[in-house]
Amino acid sequence: MRHEHRSHDHGDQGQGHHCANPSVVAGYERAYQEAQPAAGGRVVAYDLEARETEWEFVPGKKTRAWGYNGQVPGPVLEARVGDVLEVRLKNSLPEPTTIHWHGLRLPAPMDGTENVQRVIAPGETFTYRFFLPDAGTFWYHPHSNETAQLERGLYGALVVRGNGEPELDAERVLVLDDVKLDRKGQVKPAGGMIERHDGRQGGTLLVNGRERPELAMAAGQTERWRIVNSSSARYVRLSIGGRPFRLLGTDGGLVPAPVTMTEVLLAPADRVDIAVGPFAEGETIAVEGLRYNQGSVAPARRRTYATVRVGAAAPSRAAIPATLREIAPLVTGPVVPTREVRLGFKMSLRGVDFTINHEQHHRDEPVRVGELQVWDIVNATKMDHPFHLHGFFFQVLEVNGEAPAYLSWEDTINIPPAGRVRIAWMPDDRPGEWMYHCHILEHHASGMMAHFEVVR
Ligand code: C2O
Ligand code: CU
Image 1 (cartoon, rainbow, N blue to C red):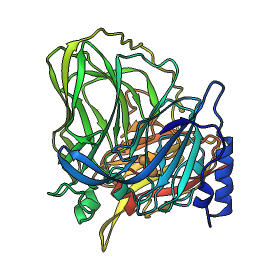
Image 2 (cartoon, rainbow, N blue to C red):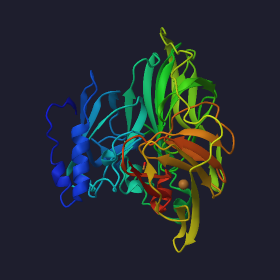
Image 3 (cartoon, rainbow, N blue to C red):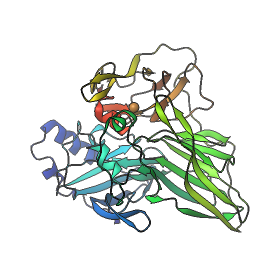
Image 4 (cartoon, protein in one colour):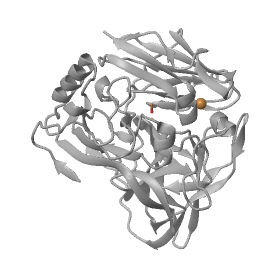
């Protein structure tokens, strides 16, 4: 499935653009040609097929799911900073799809939204090709009919490695999800006022597409866990049996220095990299989501995602340096926000509609390349919303008036009920159509999203 790609043949993507807007096609062609690896880098190519598959979320129960290459989650895509990633996606679903590369700083025509490409019709193939400038734990998922397509299993992790990262004893990618199954083990159809308001929360918790797996770990070792919350709406207040672990990275890669903690909140779409262990032989440790109060939404109960069984000891070579990375602050000292983004709702015949600045599917003002953006994201509702900005990392300046404990690059941040989060970001020279939205998929679908243009 993974192969070194030599030619510039990008399959029948031309067909995928049949009757598309000519400037969209030209933008895509340019982005495709311009994606060249850095010196020493490679073109890392994958073929993905989105199709129906039989999947055992719950051992012994076959579910008609949708997956990439017949698996849930899709394959972990791996590359290095300086590589070009080329993914040829064949759509064998009965409906159109696209892939959004969540967290990647890529050119707008490769962002996978319906604003920058024509959707890929059933039977068609489309090739994404872009340069990888940043190391981190990212993920990929459809940006068409997301509420249904992600719930059925279309999502996967993308790991981009950099130079000089900490060396640990082992690495795991853990993609957390939940799915709502009926008695026969089939994915329940979407719907209902509660799902529309709270977002869809399923009763079956998944780690890498399976309910409650066991993870075997050697005593005395420290592992790097790359964790993705791919749930439609579920918040994960992650605990590793109450033991301390060290935060190494967030959405946009490593943090400046490891941070020791006993729990971390992963809003939908959030990622963390943590150093876990060492543990003693014979221990059993629960990977849990702790109880989480989310305002007007019923609190998430404490639940177990997976169990770690600690086996015989193995030697450790894990070394976590005191300094992981240099991050220059975008803002020092007082600053005036350049924009306010208001997350709200209004009542309608359907129940509730979610809005940005009082509008569903808001059209926001353009942003100019090189002009610092300081945005106040204001939550005018009584529940949490995970705010996600496409294509650009931001720094969090304040959460309810307080500076965060450490500097980091993020693409998704939780906005607490009635809260205010100030972020800063710098639009680099990647003009085009971009968007931001709440990553509770039902809220995004109902209109808590905005389009805007980055202009030169
Ligand atoms: Cu993962 Cu538009 O989002
Ligand atoms: Cu929301």
